[in-house]
Image (cartoon, rainbow, N blue to C red):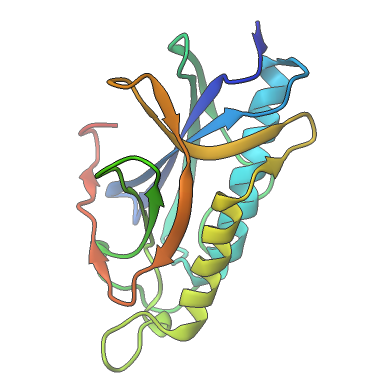
Length: 198
């Protein structure tokens, strides 16, 4: 099978936190260049892009958060490829005390569609990235701003070019972000218990 212009890959990045719950972040990327790719080439590209994202914040993520797998699915055909590791990223590397597992940084993206906002939650981070006022510090905000820029920009993998966004079935359109913001406040993300929902 192949990936062609307009095809969409969904990636669910699944971490385990302290071996008691899952931390999952779902991304969708659309192929935006013409040359066809094999499934394996598309898989390799997406894993490389995700590695670029998580490498930016790995040193701020608690070592208690370990990458379990990246689950990949072709949205157009609902073909499931299975779970994969990233090339080198395996989870957080910070040995400092972690924030509560529900505390997350929030980035959100405007789109050209009315009332369609893409959101991404990040964590679990160590306590050092939070200020004495209980807000995300300037360092982690700068790192997240780098991720926002990356997600707004078409990403060239080794085999093709991909754009972050989200497929909306009701309008059969892949919605691309037009701008991105890093929240100045911590958000809350409910963590899944082991064996529930993933």
